[in-house]
Length: 94
Image (tube, rainbow, N blue to C red; front, side, top):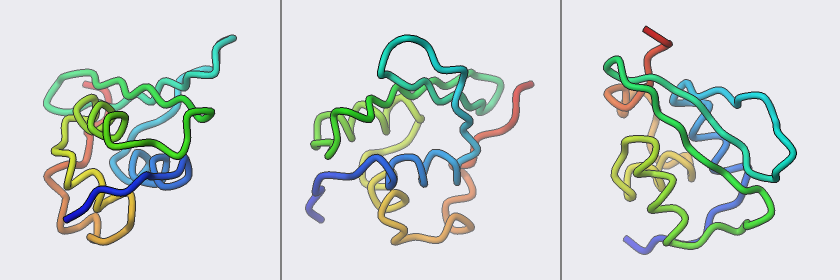
C-alpha cells in the first residue's frame, strides 16, 4: 500500500476517533493532542501549517500515537472502522 500525503482534517479525524483531545493552545502553531493508553500519556504534535503531511511526518505522528504507520494512515483515510481497530483506542487519563 502506498502512503500518500494526509490533510490536517484527516489527521484530526483519526486522533479524535482514538480518544485524543487537544490541549490548550499556546503561542506556537504546533498543537499538542493528548491521549492515554495502558497508563501511559501519549502526546502527538500536529503543525497545521505543514499540511499536507508527508510520509516522514505521518510516520512521526503515528509513532507518537502508539500505532503502526499503515494502521494510522488507514484510520486517517477512514478505510477501517474504528471497531476493527478497538485495540488502538486510547484510554482516558488513569
